[in-house]
Image 1 (cartoon, rainbow, N blue to C red):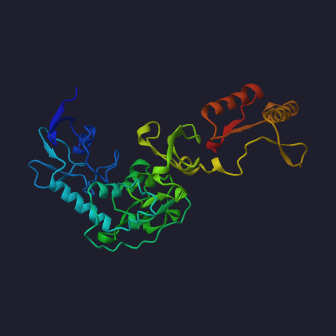
Image 2: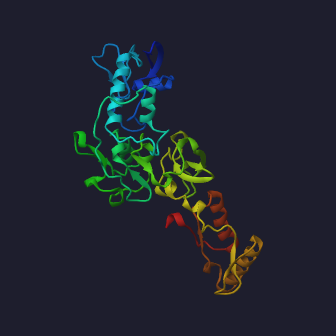
Image 3: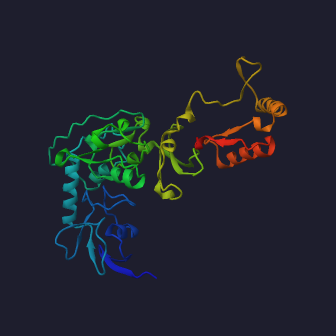
Length: 356
């Protein structure tokens, strides 16, 4: 059995496993420590320093997301020294960006906005000119406004360590530092796969889903858990619904298996067919070759299909028929389809669109 380490956080004696950080132990015990750059499952970088705490015996404040616990460690998370450091950091981040909350898609769901409120900061003491970057709208899926970027690096680690696409990284230095693809290219001109992981992990409004812009505030959105139907993996996701319409799709790491909150481009952005005016809702048949399509009942349509199958099979044999299944069907429906092709039609000519 693994030996536990005893330490004290804000006067409470708690236990931790060897190798755990102060932040991890604090969260396990319901002790709040604010963070911006931290993202569980990726490299611990301690870049934003918002998670600083006092550790008895340490020469200065330490980043709780990176500092491993040690036996008999005494940690304080809510001293005036800690709060002063956090206020300074948050004020600088607020002042150095164009954080226009009135039109920002993350308004109400922004980690920086929440910290400003939590630390009771009325207005930043600093007057810093924001970079003036052009708002990137080069594609239909992801919007980038680097004037809101706080350089936390979460998007970089999500891209490189979770999705392993290795498209994003830091460039330049100092006040001119920025995040983006190689050679400062737009997403559309880069090697980006448009999985949307960067937008999902961004703690502010620097990277957002373009499809959801002006289609509902975070507090108006209802999240509906469902299973992606584009392939057999069965990724779990949340449909973000407003006024009965899907405005975006987000991952949820709390669902764990099989995708741990990550999605591909199809699962993330391929939902427009749901509300498409061209989506078929009733069977359509032609009474004669070249004739107009007309609505029919399911029974009538099935009679027509079965009659044509019988005629083709009788004339040319079962292997003259092939079946192509859809990724938008459930696994159970796809199983029934292949069973129908093999047992009823009598052919192994069956395939699936996700494999093509």
